[in-house]
Image 1 (cartoon, rainbow, N blue to C red):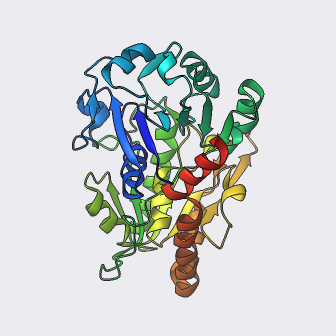
Image 2 (image 1 turned 135 degrees about the vertical axis):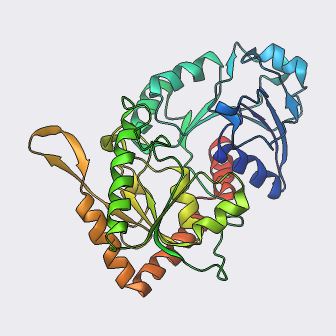
Length: 346
C-alpha cells in the first residue's frame, strides 16, 4: 500500500534525505515542508536538497500556519523529523484525524526535550531511535504512543563495488573532533576529545607499519562517499555521544555495514539487541579505570588486536561483511521502517 506522506522539518542530516528519497523510490508520494535557511553551518551536506514547500528562515510555526502554506487534508501521515523547526498548537479540524509521528534519533538532546516537543506539537506518536530511552518514553508518553524506529541505510546506494580496490586496512569517515592544526575542537564537548584519542592512536600505529590507515573525513557527494567506504577492509566507528559511556550507533555504522564491510565499532548499549556480535559487526569494549571508577574508557590496544586479527583472517572478515549487508537489507532499511510505521499506526 503506497502512502501520501508530508515530511516536516529542517533537512540537515543524511538520514533525513535517505528517508525522503527512499520513500519516494518505494512508491510513496512525499511532500517536504520546512525552513530553507542555507547557512553553511547547518546545511553544508544538504545544499543540493530542494524542499517542495520552503518556509523561509522562520523556525516557529503553528499547525494553522503550516496548513495555510500547504493543504494537508488528503495526506495519510505526517512525519515531523527531529528538528530545529518548532511546531506548536493543536491541528486544525480539517487534519485532526491525520496521524502525526515525531521521529527522533539524536540522543545528544535529552529525552525530556523530545517529550516536551512531542507534547507541544500535539503529535500522535513518537518514534525513537535509541532503545535505551524506551522506558522513559513509555512512562511519560504511553506504550500505545511510542515505538522503536531504528536508524538505517539505503542498501541500493550503499552497496559493494567489487571493481574498487581495498587500498587501506582501516578507514575513518566523518567527524574527527579535530581542528586543522591538530588541536581538539571544542575540548569541553567530550565527544570530540575521545574521537581525537582514537584518531591519533590509529595514525600513530599506521606510521609504525602495524596496519594501513586513511582518514577521509567528510565526503560531501554521496557516490564519492560510497566509493570511499569500498576502499577500506575495516571501517572504524567510534559512535556518537559525549563520552564513551554514551557511545551509540550512528548513521555511518549502518552505511558501512550496507556496503558489506566489517565495521569495528565502540561498544554501545543497544548493540546486543540490534546485531549479532562477531557475526554482523565487531566491537571494542569499555573498561573501568581504577583511578576513575565512574568513567568508562576504551582500550586502544584492544582496537589494535581486533584490527590485526581481522586483517590476517580475510575470509572471516569478508563473511562478517556479507552478514552485515544482509542484516541492513532485512532489518535496517527505509522499507523496513515504513513497514514498522504501518504495523504500529494502522
